[in-house]
Structure formats: C-alpha cells, structure tokens
Length: 149
Image 1 (cartoon, helix red, strand yellow):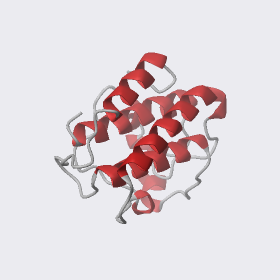
Image 2 (cartoon, rainbow, N blue to C red):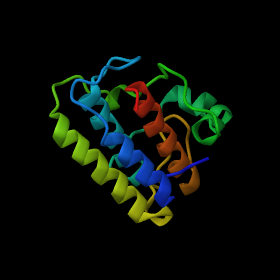
Image 3 (cartoon, one colour):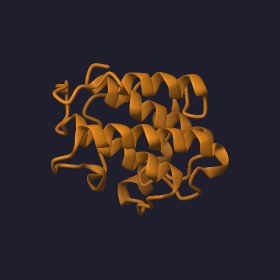
Image 4 (cartoon, rainbow, N blue to C red):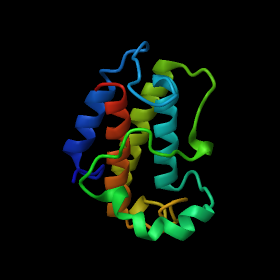
C-alpha cells in the first residue's frame, strides 16, 4: 500500500490535487471541494501532532478491532463517518485551501516517520508512523476519488 513517506505517492497526490477545479462536483458527501481540502489539511495536522483530538468512546470500544481498515489495501468506502470537528461547512477560498493542502502534504512527508504524532488517533487509537503514512494516503485518495481525480 502506498504511503505519504514515499516520494512517488506524494507526487501522485499533489498532481491529482492540481487537477481540482473550484466548481468540481462531489460524487458523495456534503463538503464542497474547498471544504474537503480544508478537512484533509486538518487530518494531516492530526497525523503530525499539530492538532490533538481526544479519543471517542466508540473508538475506545471498537477501534482496536477495526484498526486494520485504516492502513490495509482496501480504499475507504463512500460516506465513511467523519469526526465532526474535522467537518468544514463555512465558505473556503479554493486556491488558498489547495495550496495549504499541498504544503501540509509536503510537511508531513519531509518530517518523516520521526515527526508523526505520538498521540492516538481519535477513533483507531495508537498508530505506528507507517500506519499514519498509509492511512493519510488512503484518506487523501478517498477524497480525491470523491471529486473524480
């Protein structure tokens, strides 16, 4: 499985982000393309430790059993649940969010495994740096597919 510590995976994701257009239509979900990019930037902040979210009860109960979903070979399913603190419903500037997302991806990649958060994922719990890198790639791929790129 690809992960964001691989230069080729980073290049691929950034190339796909560059294909976004402000009027891109989602194939599922509620956020528009700029809101989705803000959401993805926030998820990368979570993986790098710039944003810390508490564990949720449901995650404490079943997170360890479903953790493989985060970093296995299967793409995330459409309409997967989202932490409501990472949902953006306000108007966002497309070009600003697009550039910010690319910056966050490069920062995560350049920081490497040593700069991954030591905080647990709010739902899945403690993750290794490799799991964070794979999960972040899968998360970005999920949302890129959501908007057809």
